Image 1 (cartoon, helix red, strand yellow):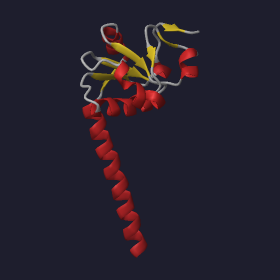
Image 2 (cartoon, one colour; image 1 turned 90 degrees about the vertical axis):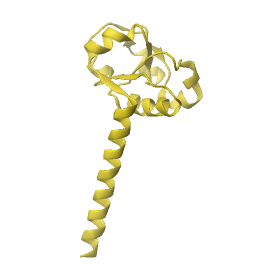
Image 3 (cartoon, one colour; image 1 turned 135 degrees about the vertical axis):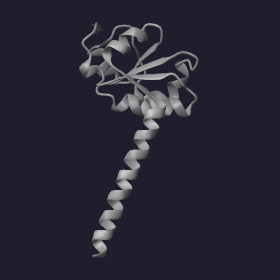
Amino acid sequence: MEILYVIAAALVGILVYFLVSSFRLKKAVTGLTQEQFIEGYRKAQLVDVREPKEFEGGHILGARNIPSSQLRQRYKEIRPDKPVYLYCQNSARSARTALLLKKKGYNQIFQLQGGFRQWTGKIKTK
């Protein structure tokens, strides 16, 4: 019987963790559809947070590559006074990047829902 209580407590803990994470993410970043993303990204800083090989394989026209793995050292390359439009392959890395930028004082953070995988607009390859 005690094992059931331990398992139930663990499941409740996991559920609370995911709810808190989801709430923090919603406060940090605004998810945009591709159409909304296209409307605003030309007036903002467009940042691809994928790794360089992924970026070279194809990226949104006008994007700058700052991999999420390097963001702690390079976040100052992104201006805090202008909107930041983020994307990655499927939205997971850009969400974590948004949380980091929010902690650093950035307020206008947007991400492409579904990531580059869902993108059907213009792309550039190397």
